[in-house]
Length: 400
Image (cartoon, one colour):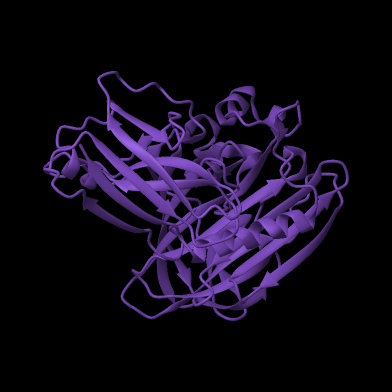
């Protein structure tokens, strides 16, 4: 996850004497950190591919690493096609080992149609469960609540909440559709794939936002509109829109853009706030539920604050369901402090209306096999924060 606080650095050059048309692009990625970068997403703008290979077709490409192994790839369309039919970016992934400073790849034209790569991310609107919106990757799953949940049609389940729920997974394959098809009574029990053991309620859940006035948190209602912009196999991107709400004398609305990458426990977020009739800066709070214990479960919890690196982490241990970690990472330069309200631990950030706020949120579970302790979770979050501040650099070279 490399785009959180600063853009990827990339350079596109042509080999000496090579005409504008080429059959192959050599991509070199450099890493300034000594830390490992598992599942690093390499992003090559599609416009740069078509500069080198004007007749390139997105389904007739092969991406290879330095050993010649074929890598899964994805071409995004996060923005509407322009007049030239240009797409967004070509994406693929690489696991940088600790101390690995550089890696090279080739993007080549292929006569054969590229294979259908297994999806490791997924996002969708769920009308059959009161307008939920659910998403996941191969590590963790989440959902938020939609308009139908706040209507009388929801019956005894009726609730207003824009918090972010967590579904804990034991398996690497996709489960959102499987669990919804089983019905809510099933996904609250661990039948071997994981479970919904997280209580969101009136809290911000795992990374929901609000406006903080120094004493009180003002939060939106359930989301009102959704839009899926990319949906795998490597990255899912979607937006949720929240209607204006009253926040200490002003009306605020929000659009959240989620970027969900395979192989990561934290999602990259971009929240853009609009203030009706004003441009006054806001203090935005990103919240973590103080006590997400499942029904009948007693929980013990501990929190870690790291203002120097811009992150907050919580670790909760339930009586029978294991331990769960939650985290928020922000740009340390934007961090304005921490606070608490009745339900949440809050990470505070100063935001200018209309200027996107970039941050990351996510969770991890002991029974996934990825984390065994609070120390494991904190180390993971610290490494994610370090990688966010030091993105990889990408250069591309066209060759015959």
